Length: 313
Image 1 (cartoon, helix red, strand yellow):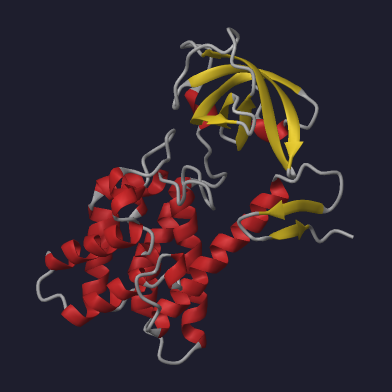
Image 2: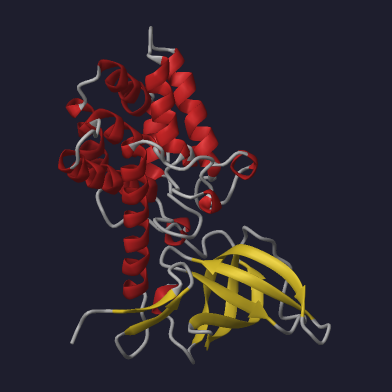
């Protein structure tokens, strides 16, 4: 199989790919064309079908399709000019080739993640985390497999766990360096900050927004989960519950980035910084890994609003 991350400008490409998105659009001249997003486990690439003729057979979004295309560069990004399409037949492709996955050992990541629960001193918080991440086997299974985003960062199987562990590790590093930080609250909120994504995003191969994800979003879903789980614990302090929920509510940091409230506790602010740091650095890492130019510059990255360069000299 020819993986999308290995395709270069000017190359002809024949192979099977997952049609992640399909749109029928019109050019400025009024001509109908198809705009597609094609995916395998290594990348998601824009594709265009300019000539809608008998070579373009019927298919739908979510189908595996066989394409014949030419690779071009458009605005510093790879784009496929597709000339032929047909639906793939069973046996012609392996579904696992189309599910991006962390290159780390998921079982090891989850063990490292849940080890943090043992370091919590507050019994209410410890029981809350144990109930969610250890005793609830459905959540544990989903948390190991889920992505952290549709496209922005850690958008692969195991990405949610990888990101959550990194954020927790950063928070653990930050906690003893500043006064007034309640480490238990900070670590718990780091572990829980994106748990709503289990219901915001559908599993692979779709990895798309669910109805609940569209209408509520992972911040609201996550705070509702904390309320529900805290209600199961006898005498769980109301103020502690609100402080934990506030950390989740404020972790995007700014109103324009989807936070219903600005971070108003030191733990909420550290969580926001840790979350933003891990997400942005991962975007840098992805840009450098996928750099297919001849030089040191990886090109303009929309998610980062800048051109990115490696540090080799």
